[in-house]
Amino acid sequence: MAKVLVVDDAAFMRMMLKSILVKGGHEVVGEAENGAVAVDQYAALKPDLVTMDITMPVMEGIEAVKKIVSSDPAAKIIMCSAMGQQGMIVQAIQAGARDFIVKPFQEERVLESIQKLVG
Amino acid sequence: MNLSSENQALIDSLVASIRQVVPQTVTPGEAHPVEDAVALNDIGVMVGITGDFHGQVVLQGGDAAFGQLGASMFGMPLDGEMLHSFVGELGNMVAGNAATLVAGIGKRIDITPPAVMRGQLQLYGFEQGFRIPLTLDPGGELNLIVKINDQGVA
Image (cartoon, rainbow over all chains, first blue to last red; front, side, top):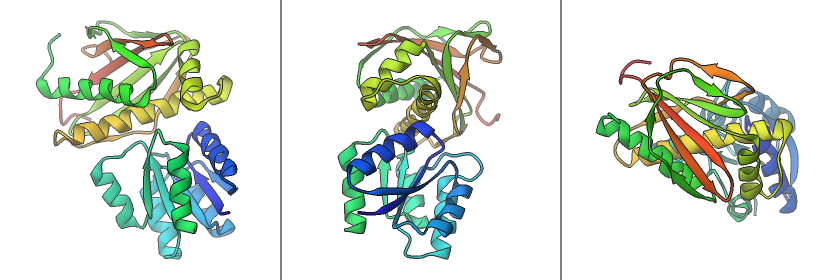
């Protein structure tokens, strides 16, 4: 079971991810609606894993990944974004994300990615 | 309809993206030029496009059509705030997947966070844009409205 921080500006998508994660036996320890809140939440909650959207107001997801990874190089972050073009995936992985899931996503794909990262 | 091949490719990518994102059968109608303000009656989402194309994309429809989409995609009926949030996310997914598709023809676009619009309002500035009616089966009608500015103009 992993403690997960869910980051997405859409309340609907946070709800969907929460439902998938809880069903998969994981615990959602926090939610953030933009990258800036995510950076603060990560420091405060120290989750095992983060799901991170890219296109968000205030601070977008790749910038948030860079900030989280600079403070914790072992951070496990999965990008969950509709922007699945190769350049975006490369940018996210270079920033420190461990996996990339393109929306709309399948439940199995999300749980499989978490399983790979947290065992 | 008078569109450059590049602009047509963007519109084709948006329609193809909707077909990828939405589980229903989507039949696009003929594209019509927008000659006046765009009237919005129920709910819609607008996403800005920057990069090799500049413009705005609006997906507009009734509560019932969007509600049925949400139910078919995520297995639960949606209303109120969750319906608004879903509509915003749908706009994000459609524009995001279109960005992936146009990357396949060597074009790079970025998208803005979606803005959800509710109620009766009129959108100006879409003149010289195009409206493409979309029939969803099962479901209802949505409208895809695309305004592409001259390239290089934000």
